[in-house]
Image (cartoon, rainbow, N blue to C red; front, side, top):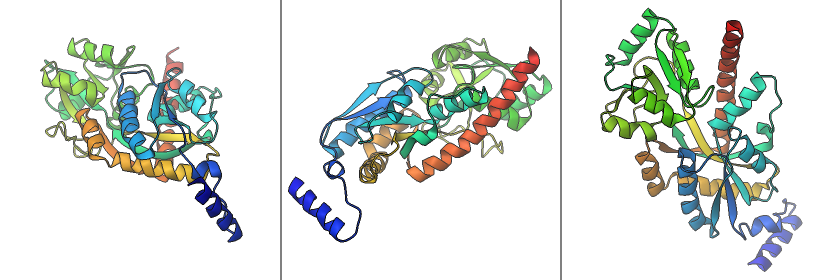
Length: 328
C-alpha cells in the first residue's frame, strides 16, 4: 500500500499535479485525539463520544475523546489551534466558542485564539433552545407571556446557565425581537437554572431540550415554544418561533474543526467521515433522543454560519455591555 502510494505521488508530480504528502496518503496511521472543550457528561460530550464511536469504524483507527474544559471552551480550542497540522488532533467546535471569542472582543480584550486559526471541517448537529416556564404558571401560550412582559417591563424574571452564555443570549434575542424587557438571574449552570424554574423562583428560561423535556414529561415544568424554524420531533405539539411569527430564532451548531495548515487531503478524508456520521441512522436517533437533530453542514456552510452568528452575538454583547455601564 505504501509502495503504491509512493508510485502514485511520483506519477502525479510527473503529470504536473500537486503531490499528496506521504503522511496524508497513509492517514490515519495511528489513533486520533478528539478534544472536547467542555466538561464530561454534557450535550457536547454526548455528541463527541457518539461521533467517535461511529467515526473510528470508518477510519480504521481509534478516535479518543479528550475533555479539556475551561474558559468557555477557549482552553480546549486553543489546544486544537496549536496542535500539529497532521489531522491527529481534532476539536469539537460549536456556537459556544463563537460566543466566547465575541465576548472577549466586545470587552476590548485579545482572545487566546482567533477563528482564522481553525478550519471548520463540517457540522454534525444543530440544537435549539426551548422556552420553559413553571408548571403552575398562568401563561398558556407565548402570546400570554409576551403580553405580560410588555405590560410590566422589567418585572418578570428569567434565569440562565451563566451571564452572557448559551442560554442567556437566546432570551436577549427574544426580548429584542418582541420589544420587551425582563430581569436576568444568572445561575452557575443549566441544572440550577432549571431547578429555579421548577421551584417557581423565576418566571421563565430558555434551556436545552435534552435536560428540559424529561422535566416537562414529569409535569415539573411546561414548554411554550421552540426557538427555531421548525418543531422538534421529540415534542411535536410545541410550536416554533417561526410559525408563531416571532423573529427570534436561535440555532446552536456543533461540529468538527482542525488547526489551519492541515493538508487538504487529510481535511477531505475527515470531511467525508463527518458527513457519513451525520447521516448515519444510529447517530441521528441518538441525537433525537436528546432533543437535538443530526444535520450535516459542509465546512463552507459552517464558515458562513460562524460569520452570521458572530455578527449577531457581537451586537447583542455591545447592547448588554452598554446597558450594564448605564446602570453603574
